[in-house]
Image 1 (cartoon, helix red, strand yellow):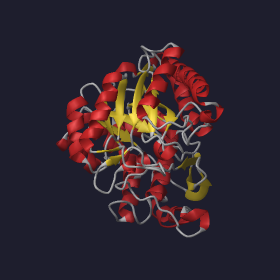
Image 2 (cartoon, rainbow, N blue to C red):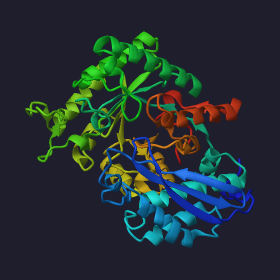
Image 3 (spheres, one colour):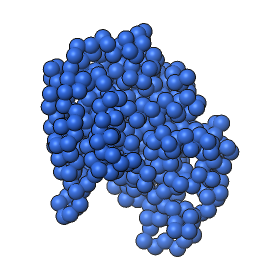
Image 4 (cartoon, rainbow, N blue to C red):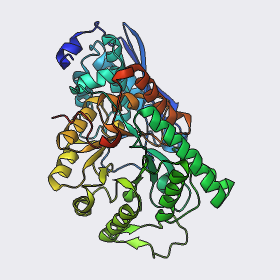
Length: 450
């Protein structure tokens, strides 16, 4: 395979002729930014996702404020693309991803993209990547791989969020996501089969136990039954996996999103959504860790994301030390795809996996740097969507190109989620006999940026 420099030279010259941004609507009914970039080879479009539970350390998602869209309009970010950003990057060669991203970062001039907005910068950065792939006449996943210096293309294990709680659902469940991971599948398409079959079986289990109304779905397509116990949520998954016949192949993951229920005195309230909260479910950090360890000992759990608050380094480190050998401890709000926070987490041994969300940091270049740093320290990497999504499917290519080994993009339900899974099916088909699936090596797939 060619080196990065050789690969990036094998292209037709393509420069940015025009940029145009607009306001579109995401899957939660809120505005977001879409960017059209034009080169000699055509028009390339990218749109930016938005999270519901967002970490305080994330790059700034620029919103308009005021009454329009309840303050969530993005016309300021759109104007920043159409104005200062366009003026700065017009004429750039789209193969120069790093140079273009850095030019926008420098133009912004703040450490968190608070001037232009990460949503403005990211829309352009993603469109540049798509244009760069077209100029080189390679698939987007191959372009991402070349930008990162990766020589291995691996299809990721999908982590299907099939039971929703936390900020994603109206039930009393504290933990935000209960996921199934078909790590025992031999191909990505087999993993999709298993995931869809367990999903439909779960619907039957929930309907029988709680009634038809409990089969309503949350923001990410998972079911949101009216349950409070996190153990009950995992029990439902175990029952569905068993009935579907995949006890050996399918494991369980959780996204706790603990920052959402941190109390003012530094404890964790597992009944934070209840209007009749008597405080009986408040736990200290060590008590919450004991709950997680008990769950992991009783159930086939392989991944726990955001088990503590985004600044609770001590409890993260103690928990990772206790369970990190057998269970992946994923930093999302803790790390926010930020190289500086990843370095701090490595130093403190706070976790052992990165959740990759490009809109947390705001550019393709910085996202690749975060992945490479995480991998070079032996961590796992899970590519992720956001709760507010669009039909853009670039994260599928990103997961393959950066060899992350894992991807979570909701349940096999709702078209903005399936757009990503379906793109992975197409990539698998395109790779043919060269297609490799991460499977049980999802934490340490072929390329670890060494």
